[in-house]
Length: 113
Image 1 (tube, rainbow, N blue to C red):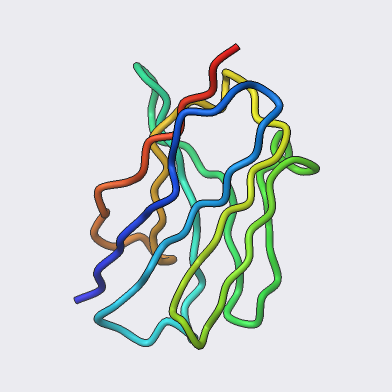
Image 2 (image 1 turned 30 degrees about the vertical axis):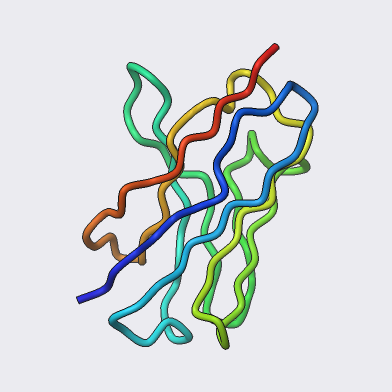
């Protein structure tokens, strides 16, 4: 069974940057499409972006230019680089496989104005 452990969330000021990481175990990471999602307070979880096994990213249109997804197959780790953060980016961020499997605990990102 795939296990996902997200980390890297923090409290940052608007305009700041963070890099989230997701360590994957329990399955072969290198052959999986992986994705990031986020859930803001009072809202449904939404898609942030995904990345193919070969490293081709696909980001939600409204996040392009500020967010970037990458992966290290040797480390079984997925990354989300977030730049020029806005208060509206405040959310719990989750990673998952594609298709979606069991969720991890997520990591909290809070952006202050």
